[in-house]
Length: 314
Image (cartoon, rainbow, N blue to C red; front, side, top):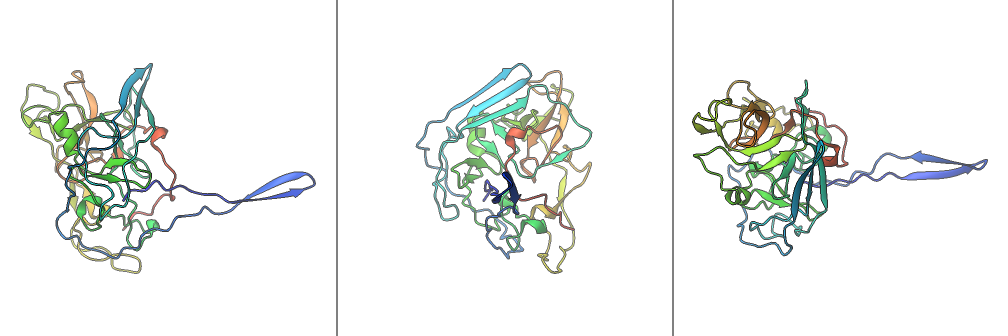
């Protein structure tokens, strides 16, 4: 499950000639679960979403000058799975989210990979947070991060493809089914707005115009441009081996031109909210579902502390 990993620094303070000297020790890293699974069972077992959260939802989205401000308690209006459950020991609890995003975001020359932060926030105030703090051998430094939607690790994910962090934060790992029902997602119409990415660009779900510049063109499900790697993973010390089957995030690679979207699962296009055009992200039915990289500069309000930059798998 995705954890908000907090670092703790221990300082030893000495007094020498009246001067206090602080010596910082290496950060403490909380222990992680050790996994040795290398292949997925082929399906994701979801927890039935039949529970009404005990707290009432609260969300407001306003624009103040050049800043879009999202304030929310992270409680959805739609039913959720029962938490705690067999795969997730945590209970949903209200949060105090205040996210400040650029109201007029700009595309940058280089993309920013998603690492230790949610990708964005849904219009109902629930974060889109696709990653999981689950790694092969429990070692985040080896880069073999488990894909939560593969079903390899039981995480107690409900029918809205969401579960709960130890902090009580309910968050989406995949298509937010309950939210999509609420916004009335329709295969015959362009997706309504479903959220805002941390860099300020809008997020839509599945359906867009066949011609990104023509709102009168056919509405189609948009396809990502990611595919599974071929052959087998490395099988040296610390590497999982096995066939690339989607168990790990690193099992996928970007195959430019094979789908409708770029490596950030987005594109330049017109939308109902932006008839003059914008860069926009799309949740897709195929991997990565929720984007794993930013086309703009993500707001630091979404950052959280955790282990250092991971070494990508070979």
